[in-house]
Image 1: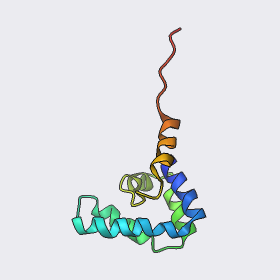
Image 2: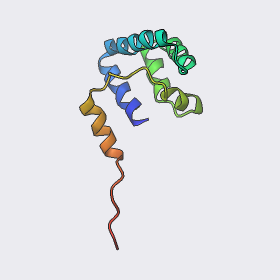
Image 3: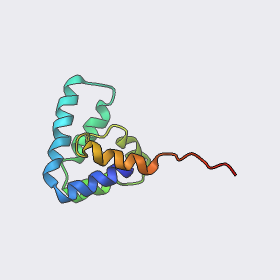
Length: 97
C-alpha cells in the first residue's frame, strides 16, 4: 500500500507518467501470463479519469489488495524512491532487555 500511495502522489504531480503503466500492460499482455486477468482489469481502470484511478490504487479493499499484486506501475518510482519506502518498513532488530 505504501508503494501505491507514493506512486499515486507522483502521478498526481506528473500525470504523464500514467503512460508507463499503459506501456507495461501492452508489453506484458504480449507474454499472456497468469496475471492477464489483473492486467485486463488494470487496463479498464486506466481508461478512467486520473482522480478515479488514484482513488482505486490506494483503496483498502480485498479487490484492490489483489490488484496491487499485479500492479502495472513498475518504473514509476525510481529505485531510490522504492528503497526509501522499503527502509521505512524494514524490521529492526529488537534490543535485549
